[in-house]
Image 1: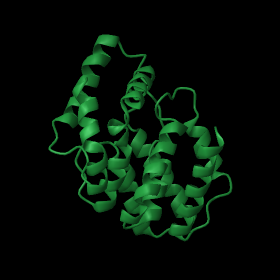
Image 2 (image 1 turned 135 degrees about the vertical axis):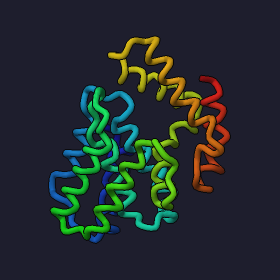
Image 3 (image 1 turned 180 degrees about the vertical axis):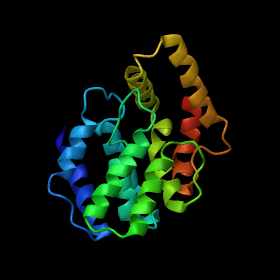
Length: 205
């Protein structure tokens, strides 16, 4: 990990817990970073986490509960079993356990759980913080053509166990479902910055 992501991780982590007005467990950050460095990951890595946190850093003032959005970003891919269908749920449950042990209020735990579950991308979010978090998670779709191509290869590597023709069909379905939305990004911040590029990227699929 280079100095730049390391500094981003440290700054984000400190600001996150300050916003939550809680004290982070001593080993939690390293535990999460180790999870994002697991060998089965190719896209859902520290690179993805750093990109998400950088996007949030530029849009933090739009969050109603910035600490909750930040901790949801830290945990949203904390558990990533490439063959499981409940990664978001297990990640959300881990986040809630941590927050409860740190003394977080029940409503905080509920909101963080809902934020992480929003990254399943099964429905369009309606809550402002969920809209922001989902747009951050989908920001990769509006990345530069070079980064988008790298992302596409990384996702393919995570699904290397799936027959290629099955993967190609399913992957095209997923990406085209985003393209068919009236808006890929539901916050003005990300819509203005990334919508056009995301549509160009997805149009190449």
